[in-house]
Image (cartoon, rainbow, N blue to C red; front, top):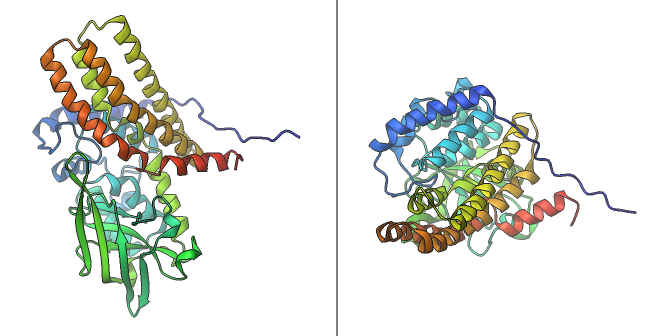
Length: 387
């Protein structure tokens, strides 16, 4: 008997006219606003912080754009949010301050948080005033989130937390961290006994230490909990439901265009240094790069359309992230090689090589952002009934 393999779905999807109209508004806003924003990066991206820019975006009503109006949201569609995200990435906007809060922490609180948590936090996110980190990964755990050792011991009025989180982006400048902890059971219990806590990063007993990356930047951190007291009203959802909640949160993280547009500035700069009349060989290589980008964009748009229709395309989202990682890691070296042979001037080449060098140093991190490649391929394989 032949095995029946489930079908992956990426149905063709076209954005509605109102979404494209919003695109024009966002482009006009960025053209006016970005020249006045001071950024620490020459080529900013979704992980480059600028509280000033986040507040400006909030003032336009484009943060929490899909959320209920009672929390400050605009109750617009996932497709409108996709358009805003594409324009921020395509124009190298420094969106890092609000990014995690808008993309996944806010939606997690909407789905599992208490009304008190929603009222206290969500309007501040919408205004671009409240920023979040993700407290999942731990030393020696790799991408195996079920093996977390950080323990939250129930005590009168809350939890006493001890343990360590690593690769915690932006913890040194953000307000909160949604932290995955073990509230019951033992390390070997895997998915049982896990919970999520809303942690104020100024809490006594929480220590933040920098992790400097290959580019010499301080984006990541080690966050240590030493008998930190977290009040019981900071528990998100039900105690013990952390695994269900964290997998829901990761779905928000995996399917967005940031998974294939994070270093799109490399492609933009490559087009510039090749000039207006590139060679046939250069045109062919550029064409292949742009075709791959456009294919990923169509797949991502299809996922957004399915989400808008109430579906949960976890397998498709994982595949977009996997293919997007490959593309973003291929791009800097392909671009560097082409620029070295075809750049119009030596000055342009030297300028571009600085860009490519930075992108190459950041490329390894794409493997683990939003889910390690091997883990995502396991999700796809299971979804297709292959393991």
